[in-house]
Length: 411
Image (cartoon, rainbow, N blue to C red; front, side):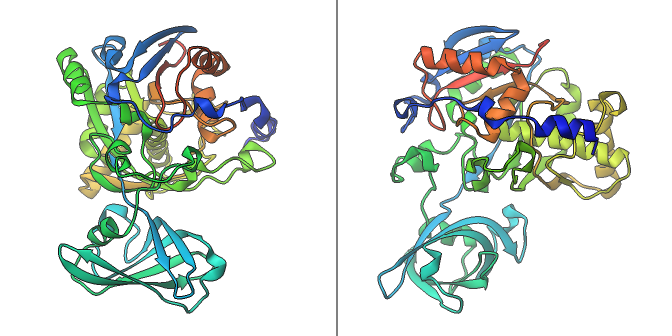
């Protein structure tokens, strides 16, 4: 890595990306209807206030909106020991028999997942936890044991010919973000999902998409605005605070992402006006570009984007978006692929050069978080102006809060 750049990156001070977030500004529940939330539009330093149902008016007709269609699973489960102790198991990522999340949902009888384990000191190696579930009128015995104690890998076994998705739907609850500081309620099963969620496997919702309704989609269609979908299964790492001594030392959890050939073809047609719906879509799109770079440089055909991979490159040394996407389509043609499955831990913070995304729809994020750094990379120091204005106008913050439409400089 370029030493000069690394010295600059290590000088980024986290305190410059902190702000005071009063508890009263955190939205504990969503508004109804979804599209009645407020929308702050930022373009070339100017701010305007609207409602989300006005969104189509502030998008050019040639825009391509890219959505993350992941669906949150009831990933938090509780097991009761005979001693009375409660063990909490939060599913993070499948390990066996497959690491591909969409496939793992269809596994039958047994699987292994990496988990976060609450009250772990009360669950020892060699102990098996059990619970009985009723699924479609059938009693099912579910067993949980350690496959790897140190790595928090849990083996789950059930005595019925059911998919893991059927089991987990009966077992768990939707894991709300910890900053909401409340228990999950029945209504969250619907409100903490986007209306277009399709691919099961996330433990957190892509919350920028929570504001969309069928009415908004109809208005987008009437204006000729295209939309496409990718899948990034959001992990619990999205809530992990930055605790490292420097920003670049922060550990980014890898997340699995799936792209279709249709998406990549649409991106090639609209490279000047791609709008990411949410930070997960933005990170996925930018990661796709860097995969194209890897293919062009003949570094690897494995889709794995390390957190700092983009930073050493000088802009003049990089291919265009069309060249990078074209290389990916050529590779897919050669391998007869209709979709790509990869993993990314890309870390976007000030100093990042955006390659695909011109606009971003996003909520208001926690102070000192990786997502604030991403917003600051996207709009520069004006992120402070945007957040100050949102506070002054009484916007609602975090997952169930209000929205913004941000345009990069020059757009």
